[in-house]
Length: 194
Image 1 (spheres, rainbow, N blue to C red):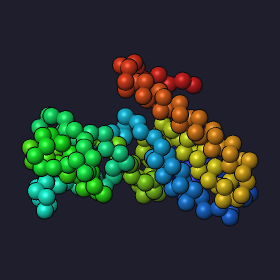
Image 2: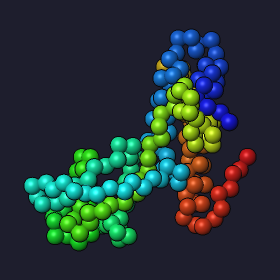
Image 3: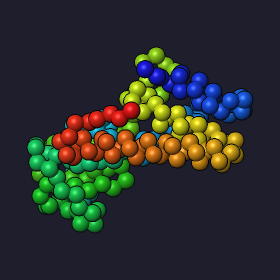
């Protein structure tokens, strides 16, 4: 199983002699950010339960968007799915409705206890014991590696090699997302292909 330390070593190997001038840890961070911004996988789905208690001047209840949220899928209150409305349509007397303004979730008066279903951003990889691996280092290491190497070649202004590794990473990301979506939406088993 690969981890963050392996990633740093492998990126330096791929960049060969040029690696001494490249901030490899920064490249890994850029690769993680790009990967998390692009991918929406089942293993990233998280549920946060909260209570909207604060009222704002418009008499609506407010909760905050979780700090690690990449994308909110939907909200439920007491088992009932809430309907999203645009901020200009939101009013306190709407039944089971919500909207998002900045980092605030405004909910109707009948939806105070909330379950927020969202895609969570994994914690950043570090060299700290226990934080040097996550699902992506275990299952999509090649994607992280190619993205980090692409950022390295961009840093070195080698457009041809950057393009090669970025294209390779994007193809792998697309395939991983396709397989994950297929398993999620068609009740088919997740099949890993060599």
